Each structure stands twice: as C-alpha cells, then as structure tokens.
Length: 344
Ligand SMILES: CCCNC(=O)[C@H](O)[C@@H](O)C(=O)O
Image 1: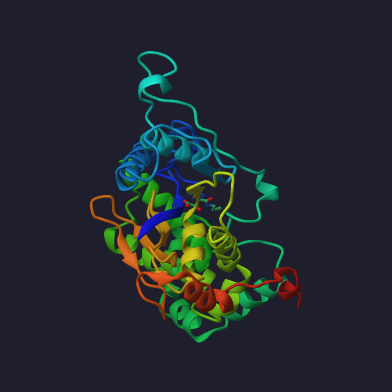
Image 2: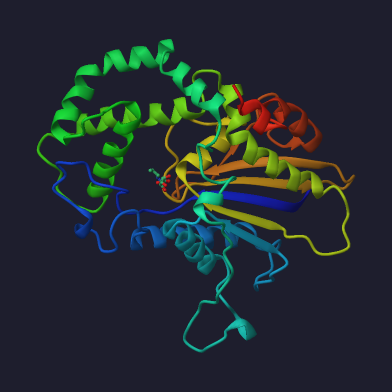
C-alpha cells in the first residue's frame, strides 16, 4: 500500500521548569532563558526527530521543501514554536538551489499558530466546559482517586511542608515533580529531602494526574469533551483524502504541542499508556491507499529516540485499520456538538 498522507503530533523538547516551588533553591534567574523555555538539549532532540522523519519519509516527502506538501501548526508558546523550527531544520536541510546563502545549511519554513487565548485545538485540557469540570469533580470522589490520595496522604503532606506550597493535591504535585525533574536533567543538585524514592513517588502521582485528566473515571465522556475534539479534526483531514482533488493537498500535517495534547489524543483512542509523554515524543498517524484504492490507518508512537517507533492498535481494529472501520470505532469518542455536551 502507498502512503498517501500522515499527521504528526509531538511534544516540545527539553525545557526549563514552568515555575519554582516556594522553597526552591533555584529561581527564574538560574535558567539561561528563564522559565518554560526550550533548552539546547530540547533543540537537539527535535533536530534529531526531524532527521528521523526525513529518513522515514524518504521517497514520499520531497527532498527539497515544497510548501504545498506540508502544513505546520504550533501552540503559541516559545518552546513549541522553537521545537517545530528545530524539527524542520532536521526534516528540510536545504540542498542545491534551495541554499539561500552559503555556509548556512538551514532554510526558513513557516510555523503557523493562533494566540493562546484563541487556541481551541492543541492546548489540553480544553477549557470552557462546565460538564468536564463536573466530571473532574466526580473523579476526585471516585474510588481510584480516594485510594491513591489516602495511600499517599502522608507523602503529600511531607511534600507540602518541604516545598512551602499551601495547597498540594495530586495535580499540584505534578508541578513539583516537573520542577525537580527539569533541575535534575540540568545537573542542579536537589534539596536533601529529594531522594530517588521521593522522585519515584512523585512520578507515580504525576502520571496518575495525566490518567485522571483524560480517563480512569468516565473516560469515554471525558474523551468526547477533550481529546476527541482533536481526533475529530484529524479524521476530517483523513477522510478528505478520499475525495480526489485537483489542487495538491499537503501530504504531511505537523502539530507542535504539549504532553497533555499527546495524552489527550491517545486517550481518545484508548491507546494511552498512562505515562507522561516524554520530551519530543511523537504520535504518528499514517494513511495508506492499497492498489484497490482502499484507505487504511496505521499508528505509531515514538517515545524513545533510541528505538524504532512502536505500532499502536486501535482497540477493535487491525494494526492497519481500514479507514471506514477507524471512523466507525472512534465515533463514540468524538462529540459532534461539544458546546451542547458541555452544558450542565
Ligand atoms: C501550567 C503547565 C503547562 N505546561 C506546559 O505548557 C508544558 O509545555 C507541558 O504541557 C509540557 O509538555 O511540558
């Protein structure tokens, strides 16, 4: 079968912490570009991902940049915009007459975005949805949530006193883990109370907060109000490919976003592994056309740059899933009127 179209969604690369906790020995001035900024490690991660994609799609995607072939869309954050740019530097190094000035093996490629307060597709959890807020409230009274909170109550209390955070719950634990993780990745000695066991427990709670945001309790309804919105948009692109069109359509749509975006999309197809998507992790959705013209969808997840991406299976379908089955199986996970379903 011939690859006719593919959609990539990736998380930005390694960054500095989004914020510090009150007693944190490291503050904004300890980071070269301040909080929430892509590091040179993150730039290299995306350069490498772009080079991987170049190899993967050789023979399908033009060697030289063709603006009709690719559409790039990022959330309006420095780290995601810069990740997309570093990625494209790996995917489209200029050759021949595309070299616009000697000694620079790079060419500008547009990365589109919308202002953060107008972002309604790539920033999760999507807002303005009273029903989703109610679902999250109910989740906090679910058995799983109460069990985890009870099990880790003393731990959470200890973290609260050590960090000086007045409100620590499962969600706010996420940001403590994140800050400590970023500091450890950049060789900043942690405070003495942070041991590997403490980090492991923080990680369990951090991953749990991803799981409950998009699942654990009433996952299907959460997906209809969250990741299903993005999945619906992706399916619109895929099914459009069935209609032959005179003008050239992009072969590749690249989305540069966040860990919650990747998790939301995967949860809406029930293929989320329950763990925070790593830096520069990439969800790949490929559309193939066989010699009879039948379209099928194959999905891969690259969450480890030292290994081949692994193929994911949409529950209820073959690994290479006929498009019409893919649409049918995912339909219940996608709301066709989110506005209405968000009302209480
Ligand atoms: C307030 C927390 C917001 N976090 C982010 O935007 C980060 O980019 C996060 O989503 C990530 O992927 O690291």
